[in-house]
Image (cartoon, helix red, strand yellow):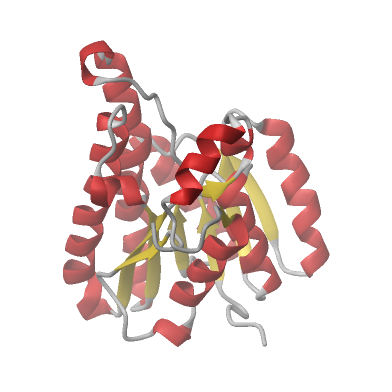
Length: 246
């Protein structure tokens, strides 16, 4: 059963990791998929090729969502190419970890811009289209770190906590137009980023997880498919934690 048949979805930061898997699962479920990438141009082009296999319309855009004008242009381009936009997954994010004492102003500003301001930019632009349509779905990717905090990640945690506050506000602002806004907060998920970690460190983390393992990108993507589909039609303003019981 294809849960997203005929819908048009945007997934930001989809060249690798969780974003890539979300784009793939959405295409599998019948969605037309627009996605963005920034530095990973080759991976972006490869994904565009790969997703053609599912038989829906797919197009990648090189775009920096942390820039207000670029985000606005992106939404205009997607509407021109696809006709409309029904689902937005704000996934683009970076880390620049350090203890507060060593954290530079640049490291703070960059993480807040990419992780949080980009969501304001994209949501503002896309919500205009959704309000006209009187329907739409936003899924914003936060993190358990945004819920619980983490030493050495004050900038990242602040940006991910900000996403939760922003999303809950959007749920209240846009709900009367039948636009839903929810948050997915992944825990320790196995991606290219975590593959380079010391196995001992990973063991230490998984010991503190009820399911005793890291999560897979497919497990986060499945939660996004649920929230994007009509199966979650009465769910808005919620934070779905996908962390294996961390």
